[in-house]
Image 1 (cartoon, rainbow, N blue to C red):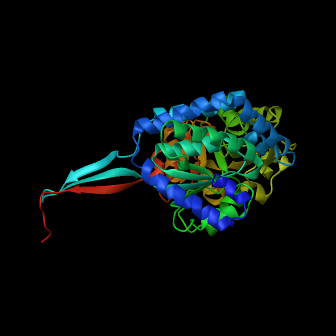
Image 2 (tube, helix red, strand yellow; image 1 turned 90 degrees about the horizontal axis):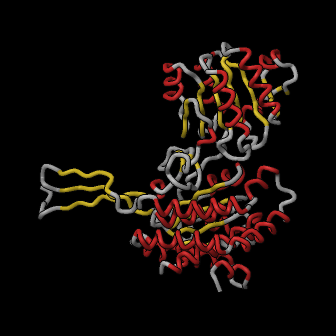
Image 3 (spheres, rainbow, N blue to C red; image 1 turned 60 degrees about the vertical axis):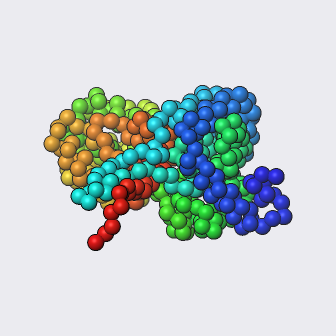
Length: 427
């Protein structure tokens, strides 16, 4: 019987979770020193198994979709798999295999006057718990990234993606077995018991080293409030696009439309447009028209509504909202400094962009906006580890502890100091 299956037996869930933690800790010691070739082989074999099992995985996803009638459209979009998305998932594993192995990398080195040679080397974190909701592809991405960085992982998928996540997990385990790595290096926590998350947050009797939540605000808030182990998290993605008075109208309209409407249900989607009062009036009118024609609802402040009375009045709550839907809030501001103040007050520290041809104001924005990602003349939807050339990611960290921005391979490592001497004694 697998450890995850034990949840359906008579064994108490606390004992089941501690068994998962113990197995993960033992596996972590093995994968921490596994060769790059073995880890890459496991990832490539898992990708092949995903392709070979495509019909079974898609059948599992159809079961999830049939049970997801009550979910929002954005969550259904995250949940749905098709042949193209499944191929993307398989390719992501192969791309991770192609990335440089961070384990053992020398970050820095120096020699002291007494002859001691000191090096700082990347090391795995250990056991990583990943708690996520309606994205089955996270099963593959998270397990693969943790493994490549030399870590063991315990995955807790949302019940809405249970069939899809279990099917993808089977492919990951197949890859581990083919490379003679411990199958317990990537484990799936029981899905039927809500107490599982609480046990993970308490650290599984010391087995868990870090928790990564990936889901809605309520999940992330609970993790951040209850976790007794370190957390890599962002609470919400309230992303802003500021259109400066020196913005090129054609460029600004294209970027703003993409930032909002390319995929409205991702954390990098723009939720608020800040418009410089001195920006081109014809450009602003065309921007509003373009958004409306794309099916976007616009909630605006009083000044913007004087320009276009058909806009929906924005409430104070709208400036705080992560819509994850084709809705955007619009505010007229007096230049870059007011835009910065608005972002400081209402932003969630995820991703913000300035659209301008003025170098000085662009640099002021990039310097003074303290979010994990700040951009100039680019869509906020580029806030993604893959788009940064980092490979797949587990999520975007908006805190200041350890990992900030895309959480990829390097962010899933720590470091240690190696000191080499020749008999030195401290006086």
